[in-house]
Length: 195
Image (cartoon, rainbow, N blue to C red; front, side, top):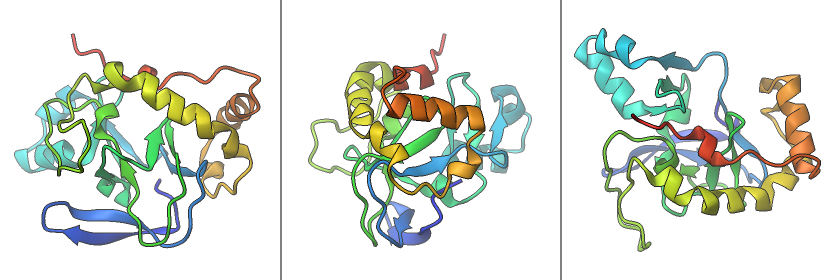
């Protein structure tokens, strides 16, 4: 489920729609949680679907570390890519804001950690990286881990409207990591090793 103080907006003809903050979102805020309504498809299940559904899954889903495709039920599936993303996924089935997000600003992910099947060339943002590759996660996980560690302690200090979607065990783990009583699991655990 996507953060509640957001809305779907048309961004431009190249990007299409995106998820935009309607209120200030402080860094450390959980911005998306994998919830019970999100649907997971195996590659075999997708092959058995008509082409129209296959296209929807190809466009709007991400692959988890088992190689299955996860389709978000709400407009969280419209979060656009940025090499300078303001949100990062974690090894705990949620994403957090790695910097403050202001009203009118898009929530963005780096598709490099979404286990893409084929290289993807997004809009040029003037960054060193120009293409998202299937093996970006093993190449950039240490950089993403560092960004996550920098803000993880804030998770227990800022309001968390999506906290109720986490299990009690998930939240206890988050608290231990945030309070530096337990090591944060690496984002690399999200990687699907395509054999």
